[in-house]
Image (cartoon, rainbow, N blue to C red; front, side, top):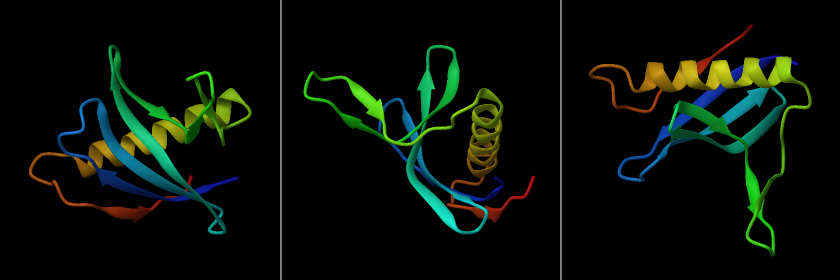
Length: 98
């Protein structure tokens, strides 16, 4: 499965939430609400989730293996860093193929 596009929507003044993202796979499947979050050890990618009755959150979509998880995280963070680069605060969307 190839990541063919990553859309970054930067968030301003939202605390640790830095961006919402949409990721398109093989030009036929999209996942919305992927998040870039600033954690204690730097930026990380959080998958879309829902709240459970006990207050915990559970991912509703996620990679099954670590290799693809790493590939997805690297690409989302690369695009986020490009988008938030020096002097470029605007939303950017770029086709990406591995």
